[in-house]
Length: 461
Image (cartoon, rainbow, N blue to C red; front, side):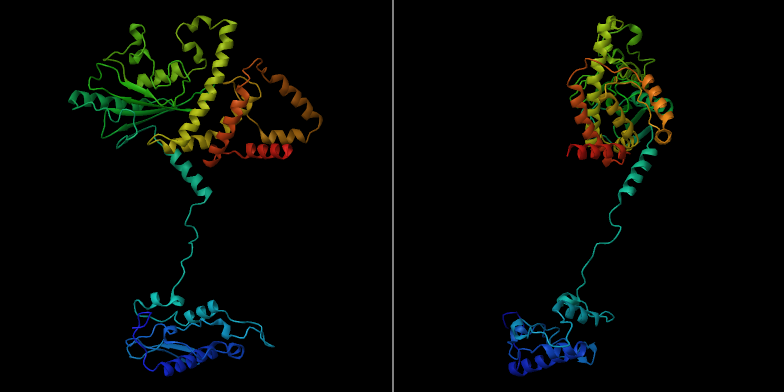
């Protein structure tokens, strides 16, 4: 055996001469010019001849045709290679326009075998018979396809649905033990009410394997500092339900954006027994339901002026000081709401991923417009005027009428806030940039804001 692991060649000198002749025949077959330009090395060791075997057939070249015969015992090379490139004459000869390089030569040899049925394993041993895999067009989805998929899933997202489990549910590790038949029947009744009577802007998922678990999300109502935000709640029906109310946890992200919603996740509500109240406001096992709890949170907690939800503050509702404090509280609340949006976008709760992506894809432009409107000095929660692009273009082309229209618009604009907290504007500008990036990834219509950002950067430069 030689260093390459092949059996020793018989008649080394004769084999070397034979190999040199074959190489010349190959060259003459596909390019006569190459024979005139290059002089082959006459001396080569048996180790330079690769692929010889006593059980395989030789490649025989007759003219331009190469034939592969299998079954005849003959010591032949499947391919040859020249290691000493110094043997070639690098000087170009007159009339020669092209010098074939080894890669082209290998490709030409490979083309000869395109239509042959080679024995298994032969291709793997011959480099110029191996094919290079290339990237398949269409392997990755385009941005438009991704956006279309997000929109489709969002449109088909049900208000109420059942899922298998909630591995990330706040009460996932808190078992209620063995369920009683009456308890399970009451829970199924709750599911029926939720599926039939859920109001707009509330979505619910319940677990098939854990009937005690429920997750709800509320979309912040317009006209409030919570508008277009997503607020998630985890609930559990205890073993004593309905004798005792459900327990509810708010996904706060460490932010307290309402007097009734604590940073630790506690939901302060008389109906849940977490706050004192009149008898009519407390949990009634015969009449109170989970649907009632959700509606109470939506209407009583996520309201227009949450500052007055704080016990005792309602007495200042009609005073200038109270109104001023309520506006400042709304400023802070909206900033927290924006941070909650970012939290939900980056870590969407289980089973609500499609809703989060689709919602902010649809509402992203309106949220960004509201941020800009509030940065200009308008009150948080006030109605953001819709921009009519067509109307704007027509006014730009009408000269005098355009000036009168603009003057009328200025008169209808609400007065700007004064003496606002100095940190509000810079903080909201930072949040705006983060939201712009996240909404753009989800496919929201952010072209207007990106164009304005680019224009501002060019001016600054």
